[in-house]
Length: 85
Image (cartoon, rainbow, N blue to C red):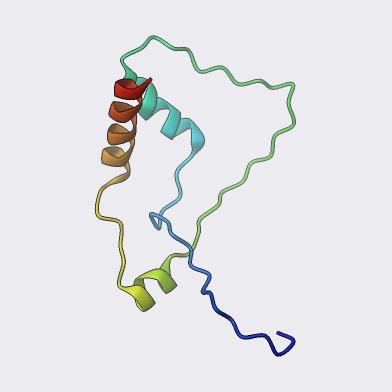
């Protein structure tokens, strides 16, 4: 790297599992207890893609793993949102 020392380390902080946006929105909708309708704008460009970020370096090097489930994380986020907005 042109003789420059690396003073940083790139780490993927992730749950280690892929989730669809639709499934996340459904979970949020349920927790919000609202009758929102999920609408897909088919006029906008869209591609089907599945992204899963590899978190093995984070686990191996720093022994860090997610401490709560994705459902609990969404629940905590929704509660915080409702209390603050």
